[in-house]
Image (tube, rainbow, N blue to C red; front, side, top):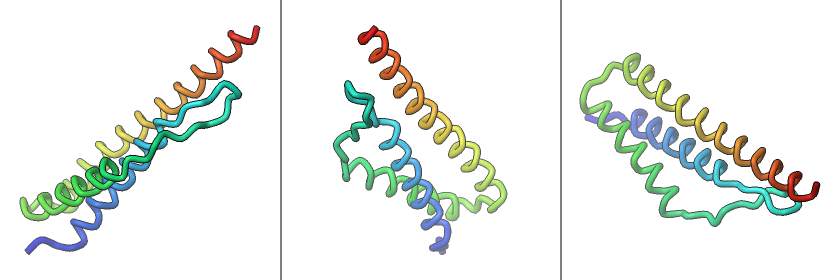
Length: 103
């Protein structure tokens, strides 16, 4: 039987990936203020569902907790670091363009 804990952990991972994916889409307006993108609930919930399915499959396949944790931690860190760096680079790029335009 698939453990509820695995499903919840997968869904939580999906939630975090969806959240940071949304945050990376923030752009700066002409005044340098952050502008949030339109929230796509379907895309957000789809990512959470995929995470839940991945967690349930890991439990079904009999992956040990240590193996699953190591795999997911590596993928999660890679994804989060990529999203955060993209958000920072986009913000810096927008600020750079703004300063070049006002100079």
